[in-house]
Image 1 (cartoon, each protein chain N blue to C red):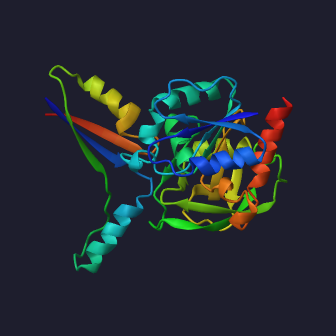
Image 2 (cartoon, rainbow over the protein chains, first blue to last red; image 1 turned 90 degrees about the horizontal axis):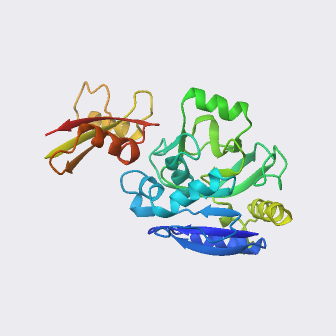
Image 3 (cartoon, rainbow over the protein chains, first blue to last red; image 1 turned 120 degrees about the vertical axis):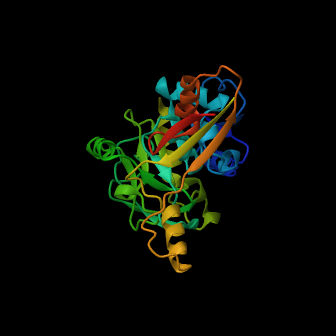
Amino acid sequence: MKAAVVVFPGSNCDRDLAVAFRAAGADVEMVWHKDTSLPDGIDVVGVPGGFSFGDYLRCGAIAANSPICREVVGHAQRGGFVLGVCNGFQVLTETGLLPGALLRNAKLKYICKTVGLRVETSQSHFTEGYNAGDVVDIPIAHHDGNYFADAETLKVLEDQDRVAFRYTDNPNGSQNDIAGILSPNRRVLGMMPHPERAADDGHGGTDGQALFRALTGALTAV
Amino acid sequence: MKARVHVMLKDGVLDPQGAAVRHALGAMGFDGVGGVRQGKVIELDLADGTTEAQVDEMCEKLLANTVIERYSVELL
């Protein structure tokens, strides 16, 4: 299984994401924001956390219009897998691959702590290593993680079982306690919490490992 | 020529920064501030002949996120 991890100026979780994919058995290549193509044979693209382009204009807005993101969108439109974490989730909403937007946290504070997430669906290669209803501990670290979508979009997400993770104790004001959502084909996942920061014994928790292992396993078996 | 783009959160989208500014004004003794909404003003230096439609396209594609924001364009 081959993963590509995108690096923007200001990304700071790119290497963590690569380490988590490699630990799960994936081959990983890093790609730069100015690259105009993805390496051949990529199964999944990781869009990492950080502060791409300094969060100028809006979080993720400038990254979403970078040359590599056109390729990431094309990869997703061809049925490829994409995982966006934190700033990566913001980038994916800005590209339109995922609906909604991430607003400033309701209480305005940057929040960096480990939170409880309830796995809402195991019906995706990202979440099939968990059981629906499992509660896992995963760190968050964001200032703009307050998920917003209009009522119609929320209804579609709920009706189609596309909420992947929900906060057990909503830290940021997200509508419906949403922490992560899937695309209609369930191959694009965006989530504010950082599974790659709970993927090694040294992290103090390993609840994120199952995501990388399930995804790598599923795409290796193909 | 220049254009000025105003970007505001849509009505109904929570603006916690505006709310914090409103609280601060109240705490400073300015009574009667019922609400504050905070937005952005973006000034563009443009080649002569740039059309409003082109500036609209810039807004749609980058300057505003129309999921949460509305914008207006002033050609100066």
